[in-house]
Length: 592
Figure 1 (tube, rainbow, N blue to C red):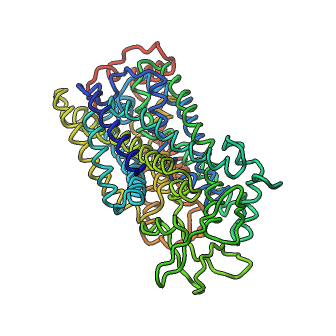
Figure 2: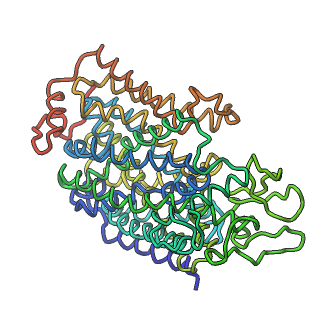
């Protein structure tokens, strides 16, 4: 039985069935699920929305490949969610709007501010969604025997059905199902492998336990192994401390500015429910994030053990692939490597023509050059196959990866759709648009976004690995949206001129920096060429400080907001006591 095909068909059928059952009948259903989602349900949906392909596929791969250096993604994303849950979510829910641009437009009493916020949200969302579609292509291309681009198109078709049909209502309950799939798919294999390597069924403890039948810890053995092959210590980082700090901060503050996560807190009935659902989401997220370091470490040890015959791999804990594929004239390789080689995500270059695969670091003591290239994005998907786990487990992991990618993609599509149909059309350019027409426009916008996202996913595969593409989106969100949201809630003197200046100051330099060093003339640049030594993944934090300073400066030299806006800012910080203040509650588009 083809277990991969079984799990993919079963889960996709479930998602489509839920979308049909939860079909949106109004714009309120389409944008915010009627404000009627239970906090626990919303917490689970938020966790699925939050844990994208970057979390499921790429984060553990980064930790596996970079060791301590990869932990910046774990720390930044986790800390960012806590910041969002405690500092922003309840107040945004108390404001009672559909979207982040809706908040910006009404809080800053400006159609221009709303349009700039829409542009920022679209930049962030399309960058983020490109990484998700790339993850879909990776999973499909390996396990369903189709090429990368075909895999993306297939994923587009599935998202099209349940996002366009069900809107936020359908997406919410689909994400609940996707969370269940992805958390089982992530934890079941690592429990198996933890038992095989350490005898401990709890991966978080197995990660720091001794190798089964030995007196050395698994982590220490891994560190000795990678250093012995010429790599940097697994417990060290090649990045500077300042760059690590900037990347972590960009991911953290970017999280608090992500429109597709913020919109989830508008789906619950009250601000108190937003706090409660944020707490539940953190519990659900922690189940995966606390296991990620173990997944990365186990995968690194397993992959080295399966490729290098001299690497530690005792038979009682882990059976190394013994049967090598020997086609005429081709060098031998483990079976899993031969399967993944077809995708182009792993490669072998027999530099010394000895027919033996060698994984080596730049400081290899035996003087051999590295001959094996492995993408960070395959560690999670390939690890069960390398460890020779049952076929049903391997198939489950594929379904989990697809669930993680598609759940986040759906949330991002809702942001794109609502930004176009609600914020641009109904609230700015066509203020007399009916509810029925707006719903039709929203569905058309979602459909167009699906198509655009697919092509961006194809292009992003040439740009970087999944987590890195997603990190760019976080940097853009940190620099452009976080300052105006934070100041809009906690500083009543912040005005429309300051908000517009802040968003533009954050968006343009950050995007230009990323473009220059990833796609432009600076592609071949080294860390010495970066501004202050800050990588493109971390530049969003530096620009965020600049954009916040510009926003405050401009606000202080221009007229203050109207008194009713200042009163509104005070009211939304006291949940349950907000008075009516015209602009915020009337549904009318604000005027510049």
